[in-house]
Length: 418
Ligand code: CA
Image 1 (cartoon, helix red, strand yellow):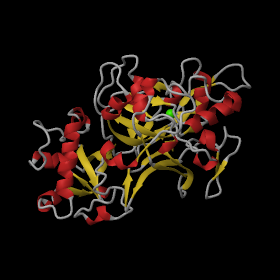
Image 2 (image 1 turned 45 degrees about the vertical axis):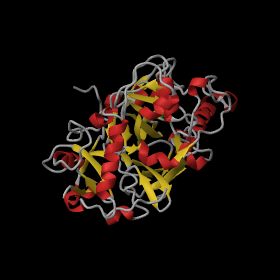
Image 3 (image 1 turned 120 degrees about the vertical axis):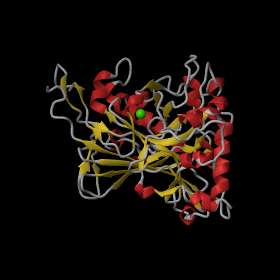
């Protein structure tokens, strides 16, 4: 696939994250206007809500875009998704005869506020990265028993909190919780000392299900993907997780990037899951490639300091695709709804500099990481800004997600002080 040229010059730059090939979906506002649907192109956001109102985008019988979430468009189904994409291609292509009408609906990206792109209906987080699961298992159980016995058979997950999902740029307050030191007999209520990030990709479910679906049907239900940081308090988790899994350790916040990159934009970058180490049950088999070749990077910038790249990896490190996870999610009959968000699980590569969490990068705090400015880190400090980046590299173009960023705010003095 090569660059599809636009009359908007900025969109044709090979390094621009938002060429015509991308057309990611966000929600934006300007001073004095309500949040509404927009599509990123070049250095601008296209007010597709305004275009629909003005009669320039006729994609369905009723208006879908003049609202603060992409859920109505997603609910309208894949035929409407495709109609929107091809209508925008027609309007923005080099030589388009509607250029004069469309130009009036562009706003510079630099001047808009971006909001959560969709209403998160429910949030499930998986644990489907082979290297991450192996690293964490090795730290806690030794390399011999690193992977739990079910891991190569089931995409393991837990039900998270949709209410805690925030858009990039939102501050993340260090949580308090029950911590239990091995040196003490009793737990204490304290601010987390081992607050961490998790580099993940989130899949956005765009169609509902009633009853079990196949992997192919699950793939068709996915509208697109976002970058996702599943903030994690390791010390809270260590004390609370047995036997039901993470609870408060993962409930502070989950940050997502402001743009949903659609499945259509990612299609040229489809990749297969790694070779199976044990055969999967037939319902989990992948009928065609359902992962994507997305380069990922994590930057850590201390308060007032320059960023250091702390990890580089790729989404193809996942052992299970989002479609496999979604199919597994429905096996019980669990109904999925429009706006459900599925976290991939932490994405770590095989090498030390490709690990997607501080827990792995500092090996449980035993090997602190050196930053460019001379500081070291085992876990995150107050004022640290963590930024995830994602990009697919085509021939002469880039598909970007926008930044997924958050700054750690100091813990409250005492959350129960009244
Ligand atoms: Ca996670």
